[in-house]
Length: 548
Image (cartoon, rainbow, N blue to C red; front, side):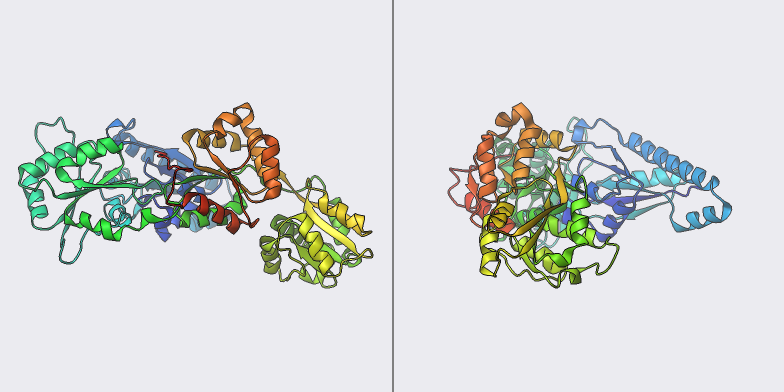
């Protein structure tokens, strides 16, 4: 019987999530099962469907706990299992429906492999095993680390007038073998002729590699570059004479995975280094913002070189009751002001507005009212719905919103609607009521603690971080609650950064005063504060840590 399941051998690239191919991303997003290995960026799995099955088959150098034949068998068994389930589902449906489903989409298993499947990835062995088992497959090449890691270290593997050839070599030969399978005379000849050698998986055998090349006449001072965790935010690069590279690597604590580059092109790093020169490079920063909001913050930090660990300590959920908001939406004509105190409030408001029983269902419902936003992010969220806020304070907190509204004509006769979080500060409603305004507070959403955050937060802090960022009082309160009695020990070595004075006051009340508070109470302001702290040439206050 033919197998309907398709297996795609997908190159995950060298580590940087952005180097995944478009086709690779499409297949990961469509897969029923993903079988992944040690060198695949774990964030790529975030693209998987919520119901996708993830199977880890990692191997690490000589310490692999699973053999290649075992991986081949796993792929075949999973493909057949997936196929059997698919055919059983078809058999249980009416003939017309079964034919329609079988013609739309066959089951998909993605084998996600670091780098390129066919460049020292043993993808050929997996493809042969699949072919022998009668399972259809395809191959999606990935950017191989032999090109990418040197490039991110500022080393072109070929360069006019310096190197006109490049050779990729496995450095993972068993050093106890009586005979080598490599032609060291030819490899040394390539280096002496101006070529470049890129050794994969060669860290353990670096002394042996240098010895073989030296024995064939390669000069002791031939430049050798070692790029560890290339293309990731943990990348470290060491350039040394070939004869001294192994000793220098041991002193520097270099361990696998390392790409070893031998040849004159390694000297170009001095002029072409770029990736490791980013102002936040090497800094590991914990982001506690909700997952839906963290992406913009994360992208900003990563663009500056930081390694970001996302551990959301809040999530956005519907309020316990929509009664107050629904009643307010049905009486919008009676409000002269609507005040939004967060982007979440904006989205929740318009989502509920679309569910109204009578039109208008969009921004036209607010045409009669003046609109206030607590800050630029909230104003941007309103703008996305076609509304330009009438009042946006220069200082992004509730007290300043009140002042901005007063400047725009707020008086005692106004009726004010505040769609906001179920639990929030009462400062603004009290100030409005204090001048005689009729104030309606309508819960539009509530913040909850994600169920998986406790273990993730503990693991991230135990591994070590340079900074923990807090974008609201809720993120601070929830992280401390998640860590429990271990909070003082786990946060002792991390620098805490707050988005503004309200969050800072919360941290101080909890016993964890921040190292710094953003002067502009926005995400860009918090990024600027991190830059001021970490990008200074004087690192005595915030010394760099090795997180690997």
